[in-house]
Figure (tube, rainbow, N blue to C red):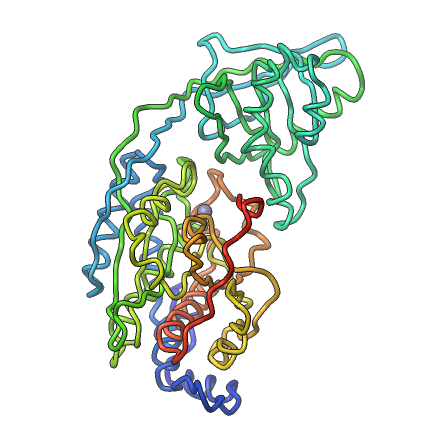
Length: 472
Ligand SMILES: [Zn+2]
């Protein structure tokens, strides 16, 4: 079915917007005709979806350092130019990790028959010797449990198990993947298996980054499916040894040259003040990163295209940054903050879209006291797409972390992410999982939000510098 079938005809937009909007607040009246143009175009033209198809089906997977990532950079630059948006590349050195052979086997015993396990190396994992490593499985459910095992981890394969069920659990258990394998290695483990961070599983392993510090032993670390984690857990609980053989052939190649792609719509009155719209251009090497973060990329690109056509231009400059290497290093985010350090005090608002292509549900902020009152009058045009409410919770994004010391205010679009972790970091993160209507609605919302931030008469108050313990 053609995408346009789903979308709202533009002649209905003004009616919808007018019907939904109360009398605008006197000091900050957002111009309804502008809202109609921006929101209407995002909802009706289907341009973000077309771009997402180019990026996912055309360019494909784009892990940092890969040919796909290089192709994505050129695609983005070309696309901005085709859209009439000024764009350029800013260099960044990125890690270049590559996946190799990967297989695992549950070795049979007198209690159970052996069988293959479905595994996927975690980004940053070390390799096994070609013949693999074999060890007895020891299960832990937290880093504290691992610490308590002490000597008993030596020579073992540590299974990091957990009970992720809903999207909000991701933050709760992600450190098992990011820090568990390194901690297991230090304790003498020969390999680590991490239960996939997933809200659903059809025997699907989910990859993701794991971190080894310089000089740490770098063992093989792989994700296992929810089903296999449950199986291993049951067999271990039943007593008696459970042995697994793991073969991983991944490699860390020398750092590669890459780029952040930056684009800009100059402000009419205060061009030196920057509203930053971010998303990350890299993806994992499996699937095509449709939700993570192709959707974010095409939404901020579309916001730039529509704002570039807006006359008069918004008061401030809107800058789009497609960060490289969010997934396994944040090098692009750090490179941007360093290269633009001098102008960060004039970054007046920043957003990152990195929660997939779901429908918009509301707006969040991370700013100083009084920000909500300044923003609220600008949200009425978002009611037509269901995102007119200012919500609890803080705006943020991994690529925005390096902007925090400069006290850059953040704004964010909350989206429906209820299915996001079903396919996150898997072979199944593909275009068919993205709903064109939801993508268009979120595109409309972010386009209007960007306009509002760039046009509001007053600036958002800047937040406090986070205390050191609040990071990561
Ligand atoms: Zn992401």
